[in-house]
Image (tube, rainbow, N blue to C red):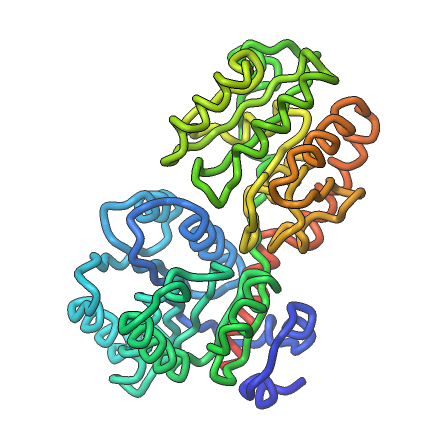
Amino acid sequence: MTTESLSTSAVLEPAQIADTGLVTTVGTPRVLLFTDSDAFAGTERHILDLARGLHAQGVGVGIACPTPSPLARRADDLCIPVTSIAKRGAIDITALRILRRLIKDGQVDIIHSHNGRTAMIASSAVTATRGGRHVSTQHFISPSRATRRGWKGWIGRKLHGWVSQHTDSLIAISAAVRQGMDDRNETHHRPIAVVPNGIHDLAAIACKSRSTVRSELGCTDQTPLVVSATRLVKEKSVDTLVDAMARVRERLPDARCVIAGEGSLGPDLAKQIERAGLQDVVRLLGFRDDVSALMAAGDVFVLPSLSEPFGLVLLEAMALGRPVVATASGGPLEIVEDGVSGLLVKPEASDQMADAISSILVDPAGAQSMGEAGRARFESHFTANRMAALTAAVYRAI
């Protein structure tokens, strides 16, 4: 496949991108990863891992984001250059001026945006300077703009159509996300590369021992321990996991479940746990900065979401050699090999989830085999270096 053919309308799979040979093409584009977020969740984690991976690929890379922010602090710690762009209203003239200057001065070749607002600013900067290129990553199956109705929805669709026409290449983090883009007919014949998320290896991260973490949680080394880490919001369906644990307890009275994360449904979930008499079985831990240590201490990791555009946290569990239980919807279908590296169940099916969790907890040898298979799948498909190599190929193709 030639560079010319990559520039035409196409849907590009990772294998196709790698086959172009562009990963090793001489010449390193200077890339600015652009977000207006001052939080640190899945998208920001993706940006940081991508920046580290691109640097290892020999790509000149920096991050544009608000400062101070968690992403900016982490980037500074890794010596990744940060351009401070604060979030100022829907139409951010200051951000546009900063990007235009960077392109005109030859400091940036490619702006890589990561949400709708930054995509609009990046497209405007590239168009105004008649230089540089714009790549945009879609992180959600159904972004917020897709639910808008009336005149706001009409304006949103028109603006997004213009942005898409002034975007050189699109990246979807999963086939499920790409399908959502196709269903909304919003690609405007731009090339789409499905580049799965990747993370850096967690095994090398020093953390507390399994025994120490379990002791802090009030568990012994023999306690069957279920771990989950997710936001406590409706789409994460944590109530399904709570219901499932009531069934697990009937079969394994000693089983325990800890759930790390915060969200608006925290009080409702606490009441659900109390009504079910599960106070000694299920614990809501709130925000934790040691989720990797929790995962490593558990026997199985569970992600009960209604649907996930990807499911980055599953990669973390698999990288740590833990079997996983997830819902058969969206990204998890592409990550988890059902029956090999974990088990997939229907969304909101607490009975199926309980069966899956119990089957792993009562079979240590089978759980170990699943964990090893998950670790192998992470190494072959979902490392940050692989994600960066495929993304660098997209850059070089434009």
